[in-house]
Length: 164
Image (cartoon, rainbow, N blue to C red; front, top):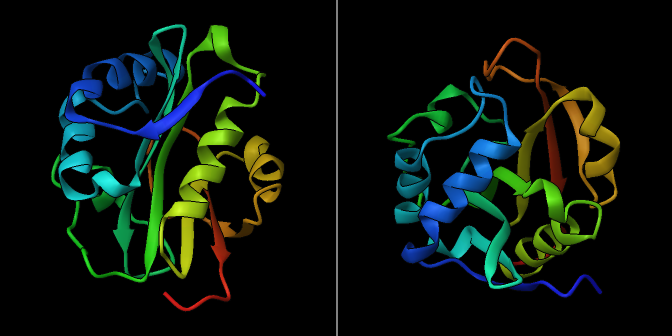
């Protein structure tokens, strides 16, 4: 066990989440506090934090999605609102550098996959992360249409065989 407490995020956590985001991603890929707050306002039920040593050590967040592939609209300050969608787009998963390699990201991922009542989950990742996400049942489905930073991203999906 990594000692982290995984819990649903609150509005009071968003500034700390934005700090982890800025530290975890390059400047042309990280999301601003404004974008993070917009996601939280749409889908707080898809937003979890890992608390360790009295601080936010990591987080995962998502948005409801009807289609099985992401597009650039989801990465704006005003993402589409698809509240009754069958799927969830996992938008960001990050852990502060000093807390990495302790299983915190895996705990966050397992939590959202277990608690979100969705028929499928989608995400984008860089090629070197494809095998990591396969561990959680995601399968690659092609190069993404999303354009963030200078490198190509890959669409991944995890379909569930449950009734929601």
